[in-house]
Length: 353
Image 1 (cartoon, rainbow, N blue to C red):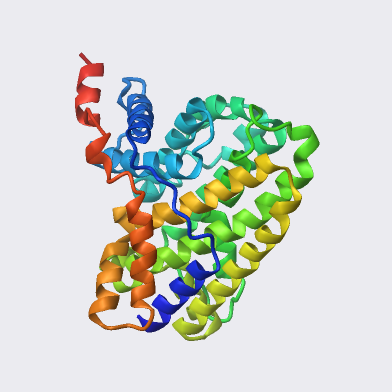
Image 2: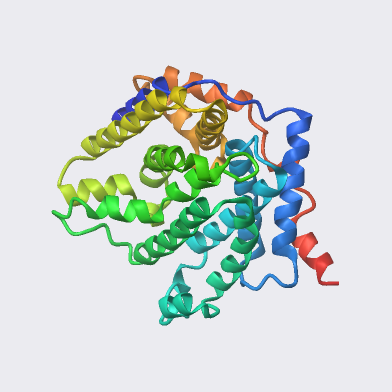
């Protein structure tokens, strides 16, 4: 616990500690609008995947917060399509893993031939991607689609709960790049409504290359409490544990390696962004601020529990952690009870009447 708290605090110290304010009535209205649009998609009779409504409700709550926090300056239509896409990713990660090989035998051939996919998740996601990619140019669209392919492969590997073969130092990073959202997130910041893709491909590629690393490892570090110290036994095969296992090193050294990677990408972005146009700097800064605040305030990551436990154990750095947590919580939207109505169950029942 001591090593973990130290690494989290060290990460936060090097970052911009401003926390956006999502508590205003205007923000609550935007959250509510995004929730209604996203929930309506999954309440439609044409929605084909069989997923428990409570799972969809939980995923929708989380992804509305995620997209609202990280893409605050983007158009409402963009945020809605992104939110729907991330719910689909959540379905794949949390619910659909037993069906990953279903209909995949001819996947590559069907994609090359332009034939409809046989896998039901891909059928639904491809249909939605046609809407989402209208907001992006060809380069960013390709990155979003590539990231979706990678994510599917990563989930397919993860269903085996395989930490990697001892001595295979590259396997944990290989798997993490697959099941992360780096290319998707990096590319999704650059809509055609905000940027001329043709003139900005070099800087877009540079941002993707750094955000891809930063986003992955910040998530790994801030997810580690619930995955390792918490009760989520199904998530014990996480990147930090996997790397310690494969490389034959201690968990403390694996945690330090994560911090080194975050620092490297954070420093690169700090050095790079002042040299690009203000709009690019703004969308990247907004994402980084929102991403950290989201992790600190979303119940799934159990940050309040971590802060309390660190204080109870009198862990060094606990007071710094508490201060960072309170900054994030002060600007929080205070959760879906304020904006998530009606329920997805009610919307689904009404749409089928």
